[in-house]
Length: 192
Image 1 (cartoon, helix red, strand yellow):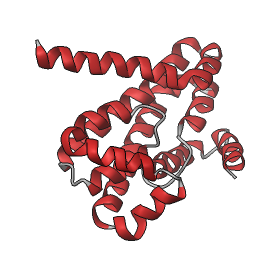
Image 2: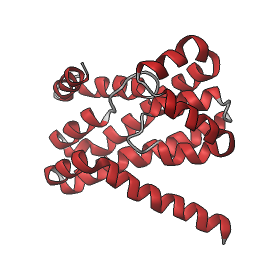
Image 3: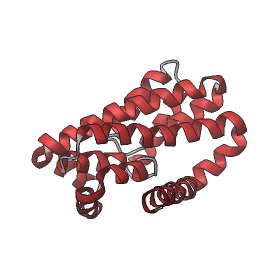
């Protein structure tokens, strides 16, 4: 089923209403959808590189708004909807881990995990369930999602198709290296 959805998103990336589809997919990925918007973002930027920054802004904003939907599911509807989403995607083990981490470091977790390939919905639903401060949630969601989507847009804008294969094969490696640098910077600032 996921392969069929993936193929559909690739087709939608070339559709004349692709920006609208990208907005919908980015919104849904923040709360209920299993596939990240990068699947549409990458081919859209490759087909019209001059719109890379527009697509990155569109993806970031709709992902943050979708994240708010996920936050509300966790905050208000966890027992009825949130738990079902966690179980459908078999993320219950991750949810328990995230829940304990959010109690102490919710904002930092969103900054780091929000721009990795970890499903954003688990982060947003857990943030709502943990009653993370809404302002911290909004700011850190915006920063982490912007970092992710502008990184992809920037690499594709400047390096084009040659970077596409590298991103698709090594997205986890790229985001992990940047996470290490980001977390290291936080520790240096905090303890120096």
